[in-house]
Length: 319
Length: 319
Image (cartoon, rainbow over all chains, first blue to last red; front, side, top):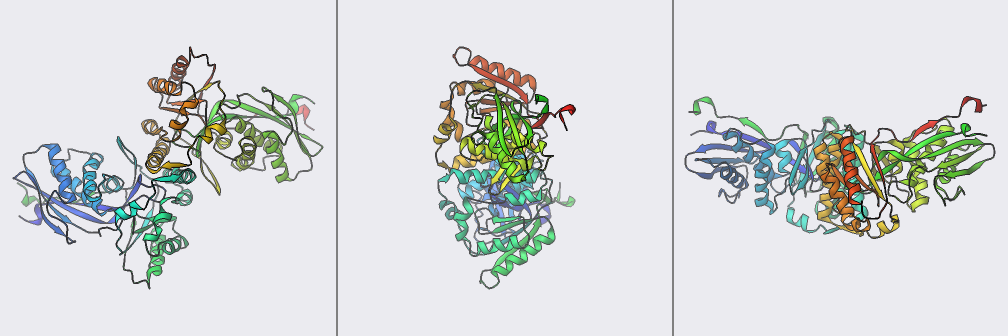
């Protein structure tokens, strides 16, 4: 069998938390992202036949997010065959850009395509969340939902799960800078206090409400005024070398706002134009120029679409 | 001089906090509200020549919110004459419906009319806030801003002040029930904890973001799913007799959501139609039927307009 037998799906990296939107707001990038390839196999169950672009990930389907997601979907659909998966990592792990989420989202989208789309894309979110449960110990949705659905997505509630694609009528460009330092999500979470001061909470949700209004009313100035994190960024900033300087440089270069992507170490900045976003990229690169820290940088539009079909099996490969 | 010499302005009652929107979100009602009448006088300074509809309010302009607001505006405008004010209270005090805010907003709007509108309505917010500072000790804006501007208004930030009229494209009706029990705002505030659990905070701002999206995307279901208060309502509910029963009755009668108006004791419920809002009113009235507690009830649309001119001086009274 050849590559051309596979359904190939791409799912993008995502920025979660988004300053004042801790744990509830995320948005998709156009790139980077992961591909999951899937094809039917006669024996039941899930196998992972290849993992490319990264070392050290398990091909045991119970130990890999793409396997977990596919297993969950097969159980739900109760089909008499199995699936073979390949994972093609196109983005760094541990970057704060939703690496496991992109893999999980791509797996859910790919298996759904193979099965003839029994689920809407939104219905795939809970399956992809199972990958997040394996990867981080909690089935959060603020990366997988935008990776699947594109654009900005609100996770209003987990119980019951209420995922709301926002359909933001505003062109936004994102600069992402990934300083290649190790930062465990578990550490970034463990330093957070269990209680927050009421006054900070009020300022935080005032800003989140402002951000929502700015996004939905297409008001760049209001988006910019609202992109603050009063609570978590001050606690986490020290984990990311040169974070404060990088953020300041981004704002000086004209970004609408900037913050920590997910739990870091990546830094994101939003801009109104592609040109601005490139200038922001350069400004942050200069901050790290003599630091000895390597960077991955990405400049992409916030796309309307998330996970997508890259290619279907070619005709000669189909029965 | 006669009544017809006065510029007469009405400013409406308001619902602040709005479940998950504690301290940042408020909306206007169509009624009840207060009127402030104003006319020029030759001597400088502010006098309050009459207060109707309520007993016990001071006519000393330094001790009455309408006087404070007018004084502040006169100082800012530096005019060589003074103003005479009358306050006609059309709503209960201490109800949680922004009584002092309605007076303050009406005073600011009226003096602005008298002066030939040197300020936009939005620019009147800081003046009206001075009335709130006198009334409650803190210059909050979440009642005066919707009373002046109408509709739903977000107070994103106080430093700097950032007041955002939301322009909600959704027809909403409000049922307000005011159980006539005394409840001091200072008590309602003093029982709040200074810290909030992070997990409750996340649910609260998830709901607020959902409410913003529901209002701005004209999604009744999302508005309804988001109208929860995880933090303050549970702490304050015991202050309002039969609150839980009243809320439950409102929801059973078809309200989208219900909660404490401001810091109480009034209860508000939002509905999609006037008919529904009337049914909600009846359902809550039944809860209190044999309680011995008197009620004021109001059913109004959430209006696009807030403070407004009721009448100008008639021609014969003008020079």
